[in-house]
Length: 325
Image 1 (tube, rainbow, N blue to C red):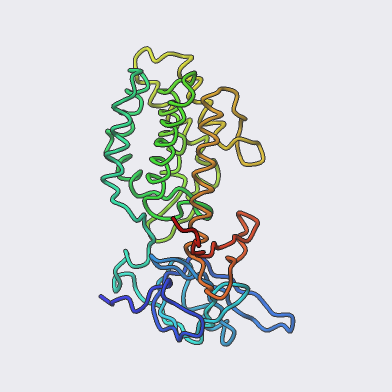
Image 2 (image 1 turned 180 degrees about the vertical axis):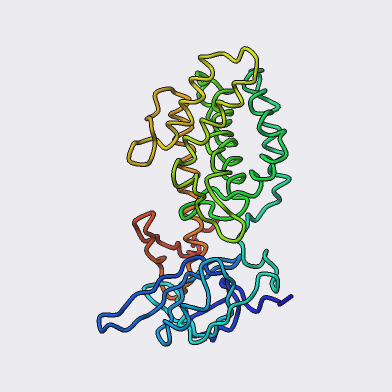
């Protein structure tokens, strides 16, 4: 088994790079003069970077595909406030020859500890029907396994293994604080809604080698999938109140907030409104934090442009205070 030579977080402008990476995207294009060139997105557990193949692009294109591990030789250079690798040689490597955990980004926390904390929130739910519903999901081995491993997204926030659990737990922690501040909220409902709002994502994505959408994820999406999963569980819980089920399903259906963001419904209850805003805040905070942390150009006070956020982000400078006691 090959030892990983260098991680992307350690690649700096001007470095010669000779190491293996996971290919998460691959696209062939042509210059204005008609010359082919290849763009690849490279990833390991420390981050991602773009690579360009300017020479022999057609030959290299035939040697590997998206989802493969490749060993590259090239040089890192600064391009539009980010680091890009100009690749001169590529060799495909079998997955059996590498340690998969070197190439798949994962949450920087113990998933078992996080999961146990989430179970503690379930145990504090007083409503017996909502607690029974939550237990029907999280006492099921397949669901537990998938929930601990799934990412929360493919390209925006918590884009790593364990990201769904980390995001869900963060949302629930915040919802508990908000429910203490607004006593008119149904605390059991928002905790249940927070835990289940993204449950469909365990099937929306595939995440064995690379994070991508499953066929069901592309055709249906996690919101509708989540409601379908909840409906099946509710159907076998005796006497589950119709109104309770209605309000919980509404939280799932409206948690993206607006139609243009894929939400079939907009929030129409206090609980749905709060779950939407907390979910949105946690997702955006993680996206901001990840972009700032992964920024690879030390010569600029700004990150590269992020197409999801539609902006550059300003990297705070360390300013020493001149104040004295």
